[in-house]
Image (cartoon, rainbow, N blue to C red; front, side, top):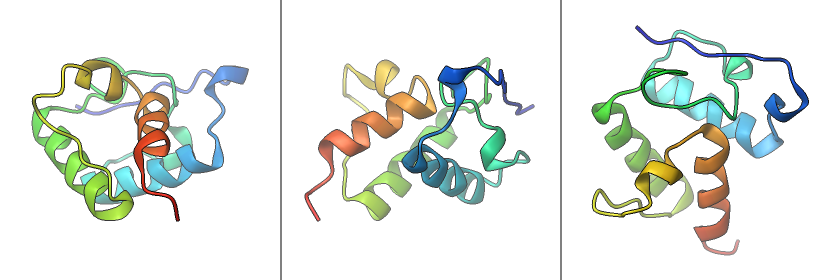
Length: 99
């Protein structure tokens, strides 16, 4: 079962890039939640959005295809990178090639 937490707190407001990423995740993973309802600080896996390891692979493919950022399964920082929408977006913004 997939769900999200929308706390309506100031820290839960999506940035424009987080909203873009949330839209892509909803579409790519066929989530049954509106992109604007994804709390950017809620966990993506387990509690929070409730994604699983197959979803992680899909996210890695999406990030590589759309943002030219490689996410590796053996990266020791994966728990942090995939911790939330915000941490995923921060990683992508820090590692994508300059336009």
